[in-house]
Image 1 (cartoon, rainbow, N blue to C red):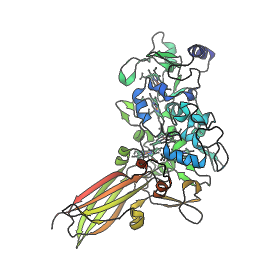
Image 2: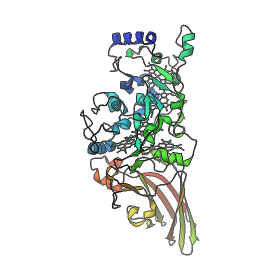
Image 3: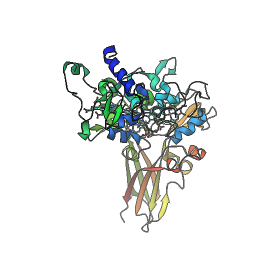
Image 4: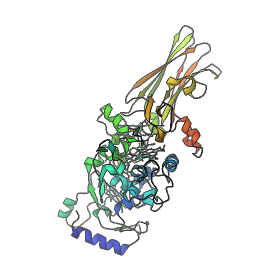
Length: 429
Ligand code: HEC
Ligand code: HEC
Ligand code: HEC
Ligand code: HEC
Ligand code: HEC
C-alpha cells in the first residue's frame, strides 16, 4: 500500500498539521506514537492496558525489572548503555521497551512511546513471526523475532479493498462499544477529534498474527542468560502440554464485546485465584487426621510460569474449638521445615549453589507444577481437640533471597499473595 497516491496527501497534511494536541508529531513513525493517542478513541482498552504489566514493562515503570536492569545494564535514562555481560546493546529492551529497541536507543525518557514499554503500537506493529530460533543455538528475542510494520496490525482490519470500490461516506466511523460516532484515523489520513489533531494511523488486517500465539511468542517463548541457561520458557512448557487453546483465549478474553487488554499474570490476584484447583480432605486415622491437600495446575504452562523467581508455597493449619492453632505444617517458610510444600525453580552455579538468574550456570531442582499436573501433599495431624483444618496456598513474585536483597522494592511486591484456600470441619466422634 505504499503507492505515492495514497501516501502523498497524508504526508503533506501531516506537515501542515504539525504537532498535534496529544503531543504526538503527526510525521512520527508509527512505533513512536504514544498510547495516549489511541486513548482518545479506544478508552476502555486504554484503561485496561494502562493497569497491565505491559504498560509497566520498562525500567522506567517496573521496580523489579528496574532493579535487575540497573545491575545488569545501567541507567535507563542515558544513551549508549550496553549490557555488562557482553558489551552489546541490551537485549532486555527488545522485550521490555520494544519501541526504543526499534530505534536502538537506551534513553527511555526521550519519548513516551519508549518509557511506555509494551504499548499499543509495540504489539500492533508486529507483522510476521519469524520464530526465536536463529540457528546455531542463537536466539532472536522480542521484536528481533518479527518482521515489523509501519501500519497498525489488526485482528480483522479495515476492508480497504472494498472501500476503494464504495464511494462517499466513511464506512468505518462506528465507534464500537461506546456507540459514539468517531472519526477514523485508520484510513491513513489525519483526523480531528474533540478539538485534537490525530495523525493518520494506517491499518491493515493481519489475523494470522493477531489471532494466534505468534502475537506473544517473540517475547514469551523463552530466554537464556549469558551462560545459555534458560531463565523462563512459557513457550516450551506450552508446546509440551500439546494444547490447542491459545494464549489469547485465556489472557485476552472478551469482556463487554471487546478484547480485554488487562493481560493479567503473576501480578494479578484474580488470575492467580483461578489458576489452581485447590482442595483439602481430612480422614480420621487412629488418633490422627490424614489430610490430603490437592493442587491442580489449570494451565497448559507451568504454575507458576514465567520469571524464574516466581514461586508458591503451601501452609496447613489445624484449629481447636477456641480458634487457636494447635498444629501447623510450618513455623515460618516451608523451605526450612516442610520442603515438599515449596514449589519453585532453583538456578545454580557450577558447585550447585543457588544463585541469582544472571550468574546461573545451570538449572537446579524444579518443583513447580507441570502443565495440568495434579499434586497431592499428605499430612498426619494429631486429632486431639482439632475441629477445623485449613490449607492456604501463597504466591510470591520473588525468591525469599531476592526479596531480602532488593531492599529498595516496595513491600507490596515482596508480600506473599493468598491465591487459594480450603477448609474442612472435623466432625466430633
Ligand atoms: C500485548 C500485545 C498488545 C498490546 C500491548 C495491545 N494490544 Fe490491542 N490487541 C492485541 C491482540 C493480540 C488483539 C486481537 C485479539 C483477538 O482478536 O483475538 C488486539 C485487539 C485490539 C483491538 C480490537 C478489539 C476488538 O475487540 O475487536 C483494538 C481496538 C486494540 N487491540 C487496540 C489496542 C490499544 C488502543 C492498545 C493500547 C492501549 C492495545 N491494543 C495494546 C494485542 C495487544
Ligand atoms: C480518532 C479515533 C481513533 C484513534 C485515535 C485510534 N483509533 Fe483505532 N479505531 C478507530 C475506529 C473508528 C475503529 C473502528 C472500530 C469499529 O468500527 O468497530 C478502530 C479500530 C481499531 C482496531 C481494530 C480493527 C479490527 O481489526 O477490528 C485496532 C487494532 C485499532 N483501532 C488500533 C488503534 C491503535 C493502536 C491506535 C493508536 C495508535 C488507535 N487505534 C487510535 C478509531 C480510532
Ligand atoms: C514486545 C514483547 C511482548 C509481547 C509481544 C507480548 N508481551 Fe507479554 N509481557 C512482555 C513483558 C516484557 C512483560 C513483563 C513486564 C514486567 O513485568 O516487567 C510481559 C508481561 C505479560 C504478562 C503479565 C506477567 C506478570 O508478571 O503479571 C502476561 C500475562 C503476558 N505478558 C501475556 C502476553 C500475551 C498473552 C501476549 C500475546 C497476546 C503477550 N504477552 C505479548 C512482553 C511482551
Ligand atoms: C488455560 C488458560 C491459560 C492459557 C491457555 C495460557 N495461560 Fe498464561 N496464565 C494463566 C493463568 C491463570 C496464569 C496465572 C498463574 C501463573 O502465573 O502461572 C498465567 C500466567 C501467565 C504469565 C505470568 C508469568 C509471570 O511471571 O507472572 C505469563 C507470562 C503467561 N501466563 C503467558 C502465557 C502465554 C504466552 C500463553 C500461550 C503460550 C499462555 N500464558 C497460555 C492462564 C493461561
Ligand atoms: C525475550 C524477551 C525478554 C527479554 C530479552 C528480557 N525479558 Fe525480562 N521478562 C520478559 C517477560 C515476558 C517477563 C514477564 C513474564 C514472565 O515472567 O515471563 C519478564 C520479566 C522480567 C522480570 C520480572 C519483572 C517483575 O515485575 O517481576 C525481570 C526482573 C526481568 N524480566 C529482567 C530482565 C532483564 C534485566 C533483561 C535483560 C538482561 C530481560 N529481562 C530481558 C521478557 C524478556
